[in-house]
Length: 383
Image 1 (cartoon, rainbow, N blue to C red):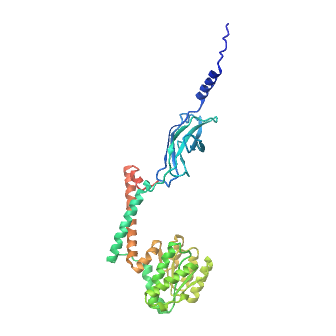
Image 2 (image 1 turned 90 degrees about the horizontal axis):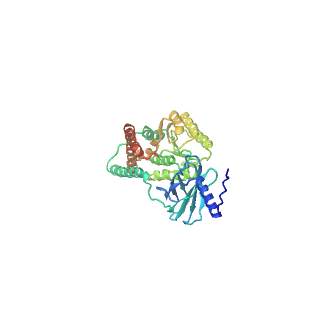
Image 3 (image 1 turned 180 degrees about the horizontal axis):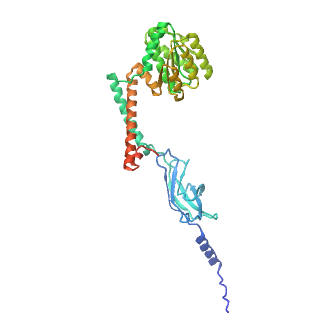
């Protein structure tokens, strides 16, 4: 039996053979790496997309290594390792209008890496307009046109506003207070001037001040905030001056009580018991003190009108008060009382805008269900 002699290889041949074997067992790289600016964003972002390594499905790949450099020659620094099966990555917090170069390597299960897929240069840029919000721009332009239309109509004619029973009873309560020689109490809620409900309450207070100035009825406005006290005092003073009776205004009619929630409610309850106002107005945003004050006023037999956007407090006001302005009725109250063309026109435009929006939602929903296509659903901009 003849034993074959071993094959002797030179050093260069041995190195080449080892490299060939290593490449045969190395994980294969991802392909078609694309780097582009992220669309419709505020800048500073680049989006990377690539085709998965052919070894990804065989679980030979445990992830992908994303690297970034300022030049094509490097040096490249690691940005992030993404999981197996991931074919995209968004690099953030970049400098706008600066060139970046990227490499993506496949990470083998044994800790080895593939050859890189390269892309670049790419720059991050800020977009002025987000195309996905085009429907919002169209809606905004349409709404502005509706506002302009109703503002012009309101200046030429007396537009109809739905009757608000609570505000119709306001003048009656002022007359009743005048006949009985008792004051009118106005409470502006428990939030500051950053609340829309508080501003709406101040608008109503201005209209009430005009009526009390005309009839000479005492007006009490206790507050729990120094800033609201100053603003409410100017609102009342302006109302008296507008009616031609600035001499009837008293600085003491608007006063600060206390900043504590329940302390404020207790002070208002005591004031009702002592002064016995003929009418109580609760306009603004309220919390748990709503029930305390409303029950105390109800016990005195006063006419009570409440208006708030606090949904959790509406049941208490409905039970304890004679009239309640619910939600947006509070914001429409100033337009209802003053009948100013700017306010009335804005209210009418808002109502028509809501009708159009609801009709559009219903129509697109029906079309989506009937035609079984997401096209109409996507028109709403739902992500």
